[in-house]
Length: 248
Length: 75
Ligand SMILES: NC(=O)c1ccc[n+]([C@@H]2O[C@H](COP(=O)([O-])OP(=O)(O)OC[C@H]3O[C@@H](n4cnc5c(N)ncnc54)[C@H](OP(=O)(O)O)[C@@H]3O)[C@@H](O)[C@H]2O)c1
Image: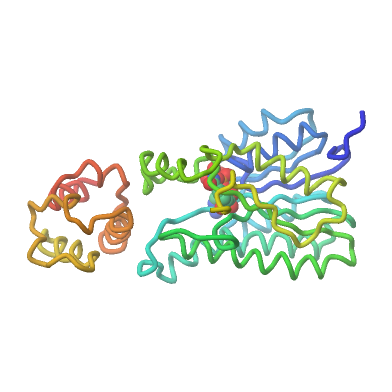
């Protein structure tokens, strides 16, 4: 069947696959024919993702991305890849005066340093094929907009945005493409700490022109486009998916 | 942290409200300056000063400053 978005024959690494956007991305990629390598910290939830993958021969690696050992653990088990989707990430709704170096490090380590280091080590050890595609799940925050108490989260995503542009240039010679997907609020576990209440989320939802938050699969589909040969001429770009939020 | 210090730190999260208005029995959500940003500041203050995690729901369920103080102590 004609399908320019097929991932048949491709091996894709998905971080943050134990929850939310990463979970949906791993499952959808497997449905598009990819072999997926999934990572996350929580073994039970990662196993649940694994169990939902289509077909067999996938690989699951439990690892914490906040230290070098965790990153080495992933790199050492990687087969040669045709794509990466960096989904692992955390948020913190912190008024700026509380954004201590410690809080800033917490966010930057997971949202910025970890994906940078995984990408760098994978490239250096030739674990990324020519003509591969690297996708970073960024955000509307820090690239198109921000909101109250979101300065350091925005900074981590803004930093990725700069990286993507430079990295896309450096990788062009290998035919490796580098892009981001920039979602508005998506219904996942990212607000599980309860700092933001359900009532506040309901109010926020009404500010979206399409009157709802995104679903994780709707972000996964964008990652699939960027991973597939359909986007062969797309590099260094930010794919905005926000139900119209940033139009206002 | 003593209640009086908690009240002091609580008050510091406000810009315009007169300091005398902050008492143990103050119903803080009735203060005109109260907002979702102040709530986030209170959550961050409790984390920084007392190393305790309170949620938005904890704040919603507390009427007075002392209610919140007792709730934090119970964590
Ligand atoms: N949801 C949104 O509204 C939204 C909007 C824009 C952008 N994003 C971005 O989308 C990405 C995915 O977020 P989500 O909404 O899917 O969040 P989520 O449901 O909370 O999932 C986050 C994932 O990141 C993993 N992770 C976090 N810290 C980690 C660490 N130290 N080591 C290894 N893995 C770690 C988690 O693994 P464990 O659960 O196993 O610990 C989990 O799989 C993030 O980068 C986020 O910034 C989300």
